[in-house]
Length: 540
RNA sequence: GCGCCUGUAGCUCAGUUGGAUAGAGCAUCGGACUUCUAAUCCGAGGGUCGGGGGUUCGAAUCCCUCCAGGCGCGCCA
Image (cartoon, rainbow, N blue to C red):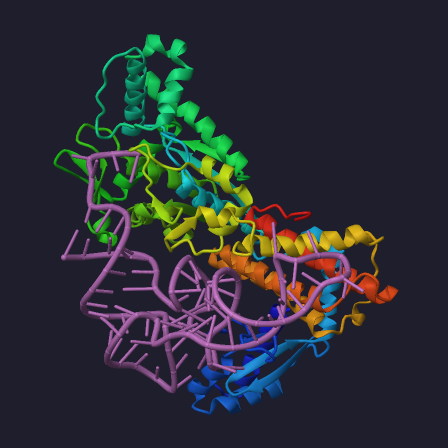
């Protein structure tokens, strides 16, 4: 629907241009109207025309109103000051309703992505310990983004990058070795960087007979532990209902010579230079604070080197958009990686890095400190067991990723109204409940939509008609949390309808129309929740 | 010291890329269950959008500056 408005506005602009008016180079985005009773979509285009042609905003809006040609059956327009307010007519609301009815769960069929290949990489936690709550936030976001982008027509792959090379794995092996020695009664001394969490103790106990021969082979133990931990991570993600399509291992990049390849190419392009025996990326030339080492004095490549190779491969695999979801503590890394890609002649602007801020847990009104190495933290697994996967996803996805999140466990556990998840779930469950009592099935309805005349009914229809618009905008902005907000609004309008109108027991045709309204509402709620990774509740 | 993020109602947060009178939920107070689930609905109170400057028809949103909180500033990953 909003497409039709935008096209009509564009045509009108062309007309005005032919008459010698100055017009803006691009259309300002259409907005949903904030004020009640002023229609459904608003454009502030007249303000722009007004300042470009030095005429009063009113004149601009009235002229556009006069000149614009809209499908009158579907959309009407009104000029109000410098605004153009567009309203969806009842008949276009019914049209959307019919569409949802017909397309069912596949509504809306959108193709803004046009089949472009997108990769969404998230979590990518080092296999040196269990996933913690912060990883969970990234997982929620990444998985929702993957669903969302798929929904609007992109070809999406979700990816997990496994750093199984280097010092961390060595430290992991040493830590496990220490735990084994501890079991044999030896007195052990931790290094500062060792992983002191209970999970390695458990691992040592579990595999003691198998590992005791190898207790001095830290290298072997490191690989062993990383493998086991990755397996646990995969299980955690599964119970969090997060799907990863592919795993890429850092060591394979080395084995396949991709790291050398990338470095050679950087050399060819003059992007790296030798100094103090090491090789440096000249990232300051592209705005970074300092140049960065890619090959150490001893000849070993740094983490940055393999990461450059990794992202180079992503582009070479034909992804047009690459989304990386990182913990905010990696923010300093964005610039150097992007500058390397730029040196390689790759479209660095198509790498979208989303930084996710920390999560702190509140329990009993107090913060629980988090840290992996220290070993004290609440794992994602614990959190899911305590509050449930659905609640976690919903809470993570009501906030913007760039704000620090205080996750109140006691609140999330409450079944009560404090918890916004249940508000949306309740709307879904109520609809299910109506159908349990009704002698009708959702797909056996042939409603006369025109019978839906009450303001509450039209408000639900209006909200439903906005769903495609919400999805497209959320996808473009890479902001799944807009869907969460939308679902709450939709649930509000449904609850109001439920409170003011009856469904069952009404005259047959009206009942059928209202049942149909319930059906399409339920489908959109289910569709939105599915994107968020939340299972709709059948009953409360 | 430098860089990134944040600061909106008592609390937790939205705010559609600069638009109309800044919105929800919780908490507080007051109403609505003999009817499809009251985990709901209706109403009330509550705001110098961290402070101060600026940009313009118009700023919570952009710029400058100060204040506060978080996170970074390795030839670790």
